[in-house]
Length: 128
Image (tube, rainbow, N blue to C red; front, side, top):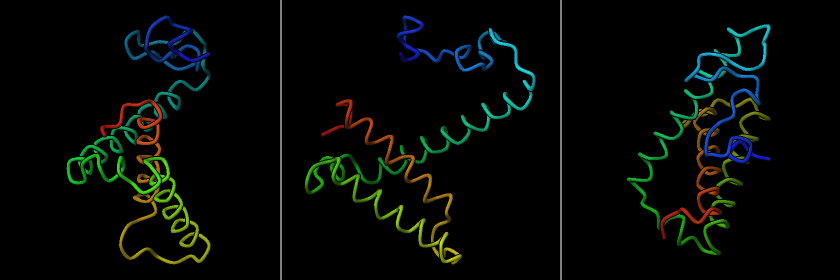
């Protein structure tokens, strides 16, 4: 069951995850280490917000057709991009090489955004 089904609306069920609801400032569950939990939530949203903003900037540069018109279809195009990015990450980690162009963090952000695009494609929300 997803959060929307549990709550009867599109929303995050913070209590289900034992997290503080930002609107209420509390959780229905008791947590021993609320400070670290709230720090994790803030850090997670910081990463997701940064990734989303990067995706929007790149989308303005590329447009939707680089994904929608990929040979073999959008999911195949994403699969190839993700395969290449993962191979790069594996090479850098396994060899201990220092990246010359983009950091490992940048590569993982790209994978996160490719995953977000794939979800949009699967949900029929990626522009044609």
